[in-house]
Image: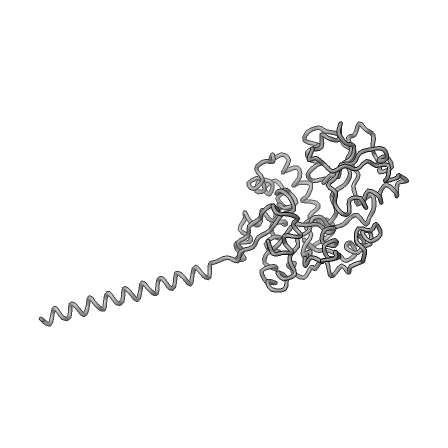
Length: 337
């Protein structure tokens, strides 16, 4: 074989080897980059359908706040049962629940391992609504009327308390489970409903439906509890504390945006809740933008006093049979500084 031919073969072999090694290096590099770019998956289970209570999370999702911190967040509606139970058994990483549910869950015969890690709103923005023409303006007027509710553990206790404080007899109130009828039912089917001001009251206003509204926190200060709250499983808080801090940091940023830009955040929410009109979402958002951080300088922060007051109420009315320390129900430790 000629020398030039041998040299050519050597050159081709070396070149092929070089390209092969280079290809392996590129493949390895790509795999490393993909591994580094892989986001930590996080599932959030709502308490109900997407609404303005949840806006900050959808803003964080839409604006890339979660993504910036390496989180791949999926926000879903509950489909298999109560959110507190789903979070307790590990079906999701975070859930939207209520102070009442957390307290009841922690004091049950078979306690659920969940804890509140942030409140979405600082004060209770719910209350009782009646059709204005019926002249039911106080819990004293509830006697002989029909209340439509959902049968929650603390619901009867609340009605008993506010009626007793106003000299009325709870036993003279007819209580039925809601059939899903909207606010129109107040006119001719029932007399009293439990409304959430940022949602139900806005619907009434947009439909020129006149109501009398009694704020719960004005009827009894103990009823100014946290609703809704973000909850997590104890295992998540123990084993994934950094992820939890990242999630709350991005979420807090989302709520701060919603506070400062209610109209824009309403438009963002509508992408994920297209069944609601932009007028309704905007009105609701403008109301809640003033409520998310009312009386606090730190989004999500909770206080022992609020937890203890409502726990005392639940014990007094037999909803739970033992008092539980606030620290066993909530923590502020994962909130951003």
